Length: 30
Image (tube, one colour):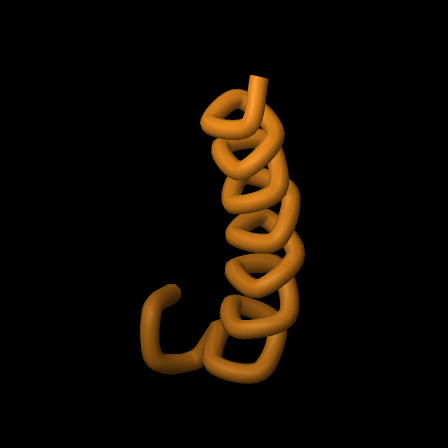
């Protein structure tokens, strides 16, 4: 299923992005 593959890709990419983003900007958010 193409939409399922895209969704899982977005989830994995989003989690990686949020992890790096929160590490760079933890003083802003926390």
